[in-house]
Amino acid sequence: MIKPASRLASIKEYYFSTKLRQIAELRRTGIEIISLGIGGPDLPPPAEVLDTITQEVQNPDNHGYQPHGGITKLREAFATWYNKQYGVSVDAASEVLPLIGSKEGVTHISLTFLNPGDRVLVPNPGYPTYTSITRLIGAIPVFYNLSEESGWQPDFDKLESMDLSGVKIMWLNYPHMPTGAPARLETFRKAVDFAKRHNILLIHDNPYSMILNPEPMSLLAIEGARDVAIELNSLSKSYNMPGWRVGVAVSNPEFISWILKVKSNIDSGQFKPLMLAAAKALGQSDNWHSELNKVYCKRRKIAEKIMTALGCSFDYNQTGMFLWGRLTDPEIDPIQLADMILNKARVFITPGFIFGSQGERYIRLSLCATEKDLNEALRRISELSLNRKNN
Image (cartoon, rainbow, N blue to C red; front, side, top):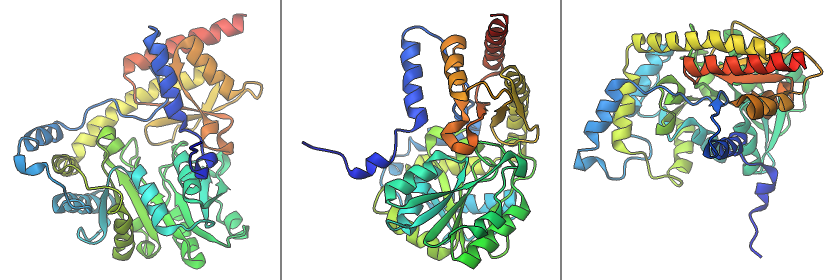
């Protein structure tokens, strides 16, 4: 009998993959579901981006294999963007590696630096892919807890007291997903110092810095960070291009060359018109993000009302395209609540347990829905809550 590799026993299918399948089945039966679960931008990319790819696909020279390290124009666009947005100067030729989305980067970096049995510091709560890819590689996730009381920032005193033997990588992610905690220079400085003293590769995942975030920051702005760190970034959230799969890894030339060695053996480069369009996106003026964030700001206000209707408290200073709230009633089970909201109010929300044990009392809402849908979700949830109280 043919069996899958034993590594599959260490992971489950991605939570959102299973939920989307469930929602699709409900919709096939005629049930209308409002999805506030996934951070998939529902708005289009800049008009110039659409114009560029439309024009470039007509060029017969643009359909062949492309460099594994991306075309020069895209690398240069990323370098210019890093300088403009974060004040970080990088060499386009040697320190920038375009990716088929930053999620691909999580895999490629893990393949590049981890051996079976190596240990990896993973934030709890945090992006589930850090854990699943670590396990698929045969490495061991070691969770470090983040808490609301500490502003969802790492406690480096506790990290220092841990057994760090065999730790090869530490994942960092600010603005933080799922909590929306903003980046702090103090955290970045401590993280770089910690990584240097313990010979740990620091990987900062930075896809949310342009959404409802007045102070975009890069870990690479910290002196000496490039010696021990890699930063991932993405156009998915920043430019409404999730399905385009365009991300980037930025680091020192040696790290980039090692990752490229792995990447070149796995994929065959990206579609040239897509890369040219991505370069056009990176060249947008600040006004484009300003207008985008006005939309998210209006949506956020409705999401805050939904959180209140759900009986959750939340931090108004969160950034990014989600709202993270804590259930104030200890008698309410977040998983059961999310299932009830889906089945009875026909609204998909995300229970925080999928991001780790530190998220078990929390709910996450996505802002990737129209104001109309958000208001309808608010109406349905408020009506359901009222009926529960009356009964």
